[in-house]
Length: 141
Image (cartoon, rainbow, N blue to C red; front, side):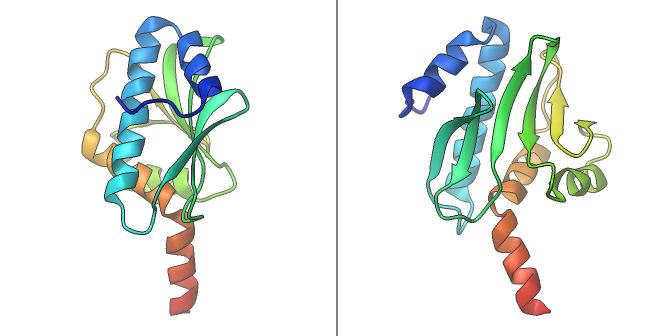
């Protein structure tokens, strides 16, 4: 497991229920591995946004990804994306049967389900390279 550089993020993970913490730590590892394997993304900054672990590209290549669990919905956890992007609508078009979606902001998971790792990595890649892709599209005209 990648060590925590930010003690506040480590504390946020410690506050999750143990079963959800394991799932969210696995998502955290997936985010870091995907960032390392995605050209143009570079290093991630791990911070807190709205009290939740958040991942921001230092290069400015992408959109923030957050990991979350809510007391109001204790039987699920999620990957959150900026709701002002087209990311979740793109995920929904590409993977309509692979994920549960929350509006235009999240992929929602149940703790007992097997995550579709390839589709998940694709969604994370799209988020981490969102601004790069938009710049490339504008350059093409």
